[in-house]
Image 1 (spheres, helix red, strand yellow):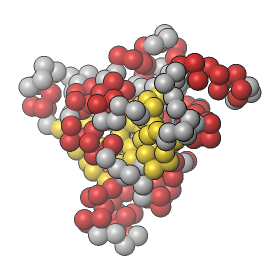
Image 2 (image 1 turned 90 degrees about the horizontal axis):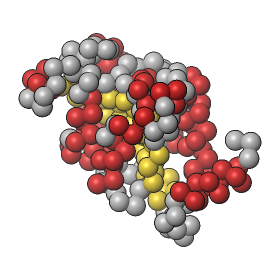
Image 3 (image 1 turned 60 degrees about the vertical axis):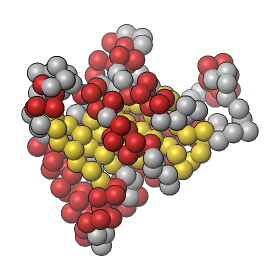
Image 4 (image 1 turned 135 degrees about the vertical axis):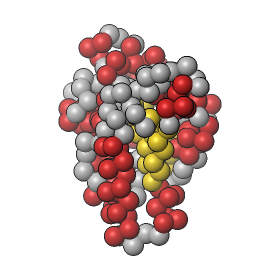
Length: 224
């Protein structure tokens, strides 16, 4: 950022209840394709994750950035945004959370390839894994992966492959099954899960996971 002082004043105006003497948890919710900046200001706010997250920590700072793509540029922008908040606000670095939905999940995978050490836990929703695994496995950042078995946009095979490859890397690093299950979860929902809640298209039902307390508790209960 070229003018950090102006940016700080802008965010301070938004966070009018911010107390610099108090440590805050922080959550970055990366939206899907329909929430990117070119879709229109505020279009990211149709997703449920930033709103449901408030139920798990009412004092948590929640950031839902409107990114420009679902690839390298947005991954670097996300990392810069995370660094900005960690350096300029009183953030509890043991409680830094991130999620990515659909295209935002692709971005999430690249963020976790480049800088997994920033995050306490991560939620990957209805997407495909574009990043590499080694840095994430080395950092042992907890990751919850959830998708429909027959996701209409991505399918579930790429997600299953990513999970299996990460699992193997953890095994090769000497972790037990119990240790791996604590930090890596694959949750593939059957079609009936979506039908019972009014969705025939599994990808269109990706917001349903935000209302699953087991999933959201898994993410926000983690502490470094």
